[in-house]
Image 1: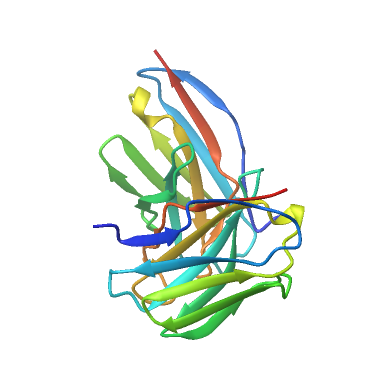
Image 2: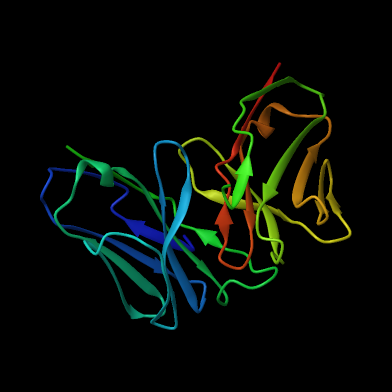
Length: 115
Length: 106
């Protein structure tokens, strides 16, 4: 069974479109994250939710809006897509918010290409 | 200065070699440190945590130097399967370095 699953795995879309990436974890974790990995391989945290509450909200355009309907799901909606949004988006989860020794588990990534 | 910095490599080494990577961090209050491994077009996976006294897991040894603010990863007897990008992670907010690419050749 996949622990952290995200869909779609690949997404090619035109500039200006709105798209969503869904994420679900079956590990019973309280905390979920969205990370963005760009073409230079930098992995940057975007958002983190703990029990459906937003706890980390890094400086990202407000075109990006996370939604957590319950603690097992964290979806990412992106409005008015731009070329620079092309990247791999990783969903992840951990048992608790980031603390010493906390292991984070990643989904397989969603490869977004904006054309 | 970036919060977490790594030499991006690539490090090209022969099988059986010993290779070491360093990762420097800027926040002296950082408390938690990890090494993750990321294979090409795959998600990062935890390799090992880094403890203050240093720790070893088979061929892998992790060290922390608080005075100089860096962590290190030593891989002994490199295998072809060790080829990957190694990411250091610092602090509670799980700040990732940009990764060091390792390529082990026959």
